[in-house]
Each structure stands twice: as C-alpha cells, then as structure tokens.
Image (cartoon, rainbow, N blue to C red; front, side, top):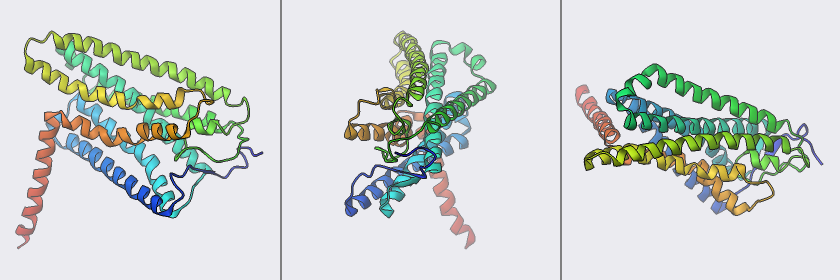
Length: 317
C-alpha cells in the first residue's frame, strides 16, 4: 500500500513494448505535433497579420488556436520522449502540471466555443446590433472571462485530485496524466469527493452545451429564412466549422463523466486520442477549409513571405 506523499513518480501506459513500434509511435506523434504547430501557428499569424480579420469571430478563433497549441504541447512532447527513451515515468510534479494545463486548456476552450456560438447567433440573428453587443472591449472581456474560468476550474480540480490519498500504486492506464485514471488509484471511497465535483462540472458543461444548441436552433431558423442561396451558403460557411469543432470535443465528456467502474482500456485509449490529439490538429484545417477570408489572407501571407525571400538575395548582390 502506498499513499500520495510517498509517490515520487507515475508510470504512464506505453503504446507498445516493441522497440521498433515505439520508434514508429514517436515519429507518428512527431508528425501530428508538427502538423498541429504548423496549422495553429498559421492561423494565429494570419489573423494577427491581416487587418481584415480583426473582427470578433477571428479574435475568438485566435484564442482557440492558442489553446489548441497549449493542449497538444502539454501531452505530446512527454509521450514522444517516453517512446524515444523507452521509459514510462513521469514525475509527480510533472503529472500535476500536466493535469492542470490540460484541464485548463480544455475547459477554457469549451467556454470559448460557447462564446463563439453566441457570436454567430448575434451575427446572423441580430446583425444590426453586432457592433454594439460585440465591440472590442466586450470581446476582450468575454475572452478574459473564459481564460479566468478555465484557470480557476483547473486549479480547483487539480488541487482536489492530488489531495486525495492514493493507495493503489502509481501505474496510470493512460499515455498522459488525467483525472479519471488518477482517481482509480485513490483509496476506496476517497474518490467520491472528486466524483461529486465532476458531476457538478458535468452539469455546468451541459448548460454550456444547451446554450450552444439553442443558439444554433435560432441560427438555422434565421438562415433558412434568407431568400438568396448565396446568403445561406455564406452563413453556413461561418457556422459549420464551429459545429464541427464542438462535435470533436464530445468524446471528452464520455471519458470524464462515465462511472470509474466502467473501464475498457482499448476504448479509453482510443477516446483519449480522439479528444486530446485530433481536435488541436484538425481545428485549423476545419476553420480554413470552408472559410474564404482565412484562405485568402493565408494565401497573401504565404505569397508575401515567398516574395520577400526571393527579393532578399537579389538585393544583396
């Protein structure tokens, strides 16, 4: 029997014990990580660089890209290092930091997605009041509130989780530190306090989900009343990427709100990959694929950068 005060490290779940497959896992995760860095980095740079994208929708999208970068950077580097060096260990402090940063990024992102649904609701259903209700100051205040709420929520969960006595060893059934698997190591009955907090959190996030659903019910009613097909297409092109991103975050609730007694290791691993790695990697693609403004600004940024590179050598001759 061990308790949390005597644990100095946790053991993460390896994807495989075969050395060749460990290296394959490293290169696969490295590719995913670089794709996420490139995609979100381009979104951030493009929005910051192009004055035409300095609007509430793209301001919130920039915040979303920052959170995606933070989320995937919290998980993948450690997992890649473990595969490369054939180890499973993560320090106790490292696990605490990983839990805090992951919960912070994911909870803030969901708050931000709720705000983004409100932005689309105002833009489509009340366009004449858009500038009044979503001025620059209001957008900054809403984004700051989302970040602050995510910070406090993560601090509460992390403090509560790691204050529980751990009596069932230090082996986590996951490739990164997360609350459900740490709760499985807690003493019998000790996890009920954190479980109660998770239930309350589930209710709060369900309210956010209902808010998103109600916003889109009003949005779709307004869109289908638009007489021109071009107008409907333009409205859908700004809403569907947001809906896709909200859908990608759904597996997170399955992982955190299901009872601890229900555990299927292979399914849990697949679900964790779906909510921790796929959204940060695909979100930039989703938002740029159907958004003409982002694609045009990105094209200008890339062509402008290439032309500068071409001019620099010729200017030095």
